Length: 273
Length: 294
Image (cartoon, rainbow over all chains, first blue to last red):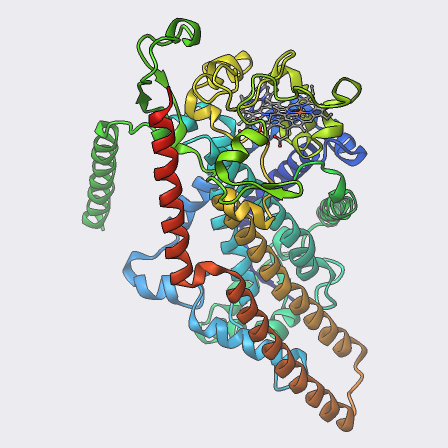
């Protein structure tokens, strides 16, 4: 019994983000740690110190293009006939007051008070995951372009703006990577309810009982709207596809954790302030 | 239906035309050059032929107003605090040879005496030596009038060797970036200091919320998987501990915040005003000094 959760385009966007993000993390942190063995081995995957920045730049451009396409996609999802409901309704990712309430309720639930909140389609942590890309990526894009074209930048800004943008770029990258490699991986793969892997983002489906348990309001709403049966008309993923995405997912996880642990271990040897 | 489609098309075409007009309007706005690009004329004419970089005729380009590093009041280096004017002399900031008379100078490498300065991107990552920027012996002080590092000509004499087309604003980049976290940087380069602490706060805040959140959710789900139930007395005890913890944490947070706000003199307007007045007086004094110079 499976329930459809993500369509093909959405999964493609997510896959695109995984691959580009990991490449950016590998090239960027490789260069940051270039004075250590870790940084040298990491950049050697991407062709060394000098090539890594070229890869970093072009993949960054690709990411911005993907981001633009995604934003356009997002705008086309808005239903103009039913504007308020499609922006603030339960199918939307926009944060609302009920998310604060769910957060509070869920924290109390973890400590044994009350029951888990009646989550609808998107839980508050999923919404946070989603929107954090929206301020992280533009910040990294703008500061990255400033650093890539320092002469152009200093036509408009004084030179010390480059010091600031370098710091911002580094700090935001560390923030994004540590959030993804610690929190997002834990929620996606490692917490008991979704261990060994939350397959929704790769196969597009969630098992019905999992949805009932974690997102009861969503399933209930689908039933009332009469869309439940329609969304349950999905085939389980083929075996080869499952094997593929398990291998891919765990490779990505391993790569992230490799960067995380080595980053912490070698952090003292960057030799910059 | 058809009508709706044409209406949608009309909206899209209207949007596109509006966008184009907006772009055109933006393009007509003249590029405002950074303040670092402003042209200043020097009063001193007699050294012109020796000083001129050759790139400019009757003037030089100086980024001095765009400097983010403020003058530190009451500079202290080493054991003794200097007044601002004697510090200029004592710390060799204007000498033609900044190492004149220093013992053991020729037996040491630059990094042994200036370890802090070695921690910059050019040296660490690109492997550029100190002399590629600071030049051969004698190494002049940064502010010495004829120094290639003088902000008047740094862009063309130093940076442009490698960064083709370097401008004065580009050269006001801080090659030896001060350690962003330190309190000294708050005085000397506040923008860097506040950016650093702002980002750190964001990082620590995000992780300090989400890591315990994940761990708690994980534990709770684990307990459901193992299907063990918590005895009532334990539950009550835990609740007590939790209440105490919340009280203790909020109390110490408030106390810490109060201490921090006391430390930041910025929060006290009277201190801020006094500091500003002091700085203003210093600037006046400095101006008088330079105006009276021969």
